[in-house]
Length: 165
Image 1 (cartoon, rainbow, N blue to C red):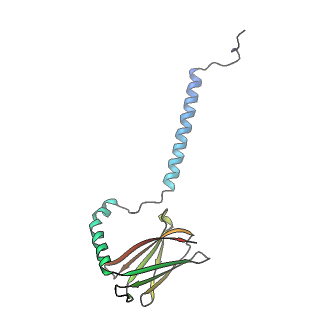
Image 2: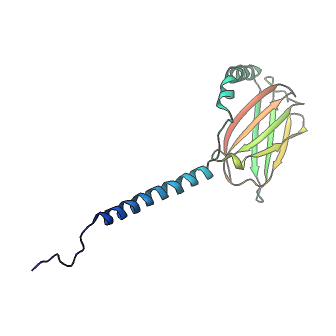
Image 3: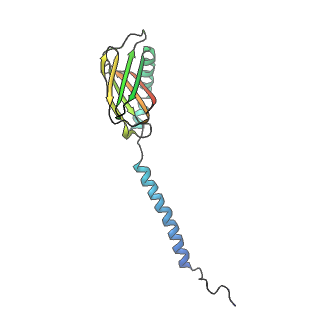
């Protein structure tokens, strides 16, 4: 008696169908993962690495100039229950005198996705005290980027990580 008479033999056609199905699933999943990766890519820190490399020496000089000024610029962010964030900046020079007349730009930047960045317009409310409001700020980790200029020249730049509740 033949015990294997009720099983079907493996043919070339069966092997071909199994191989096509296997590679079809692998290629299909790779396509889905590539699509998801491209759609969720938060972007890059700089638009042109070449342009950033050309400006590298100027950034080093600006950093040394900033250190030589001895300024103390402190930024604080408080998130309200409605999602708005109040940004307060106090700027003082090396002699601890308030710095006035600066144009200070603030940006709340998401470390993981720059599409959620918020630019905050600051105005000088008191001598050396600047304040602004950002709306729709989610809780979590943010970078507070402060840049002070006198109109044409950048005088101060800082980036500080903070957690908002």
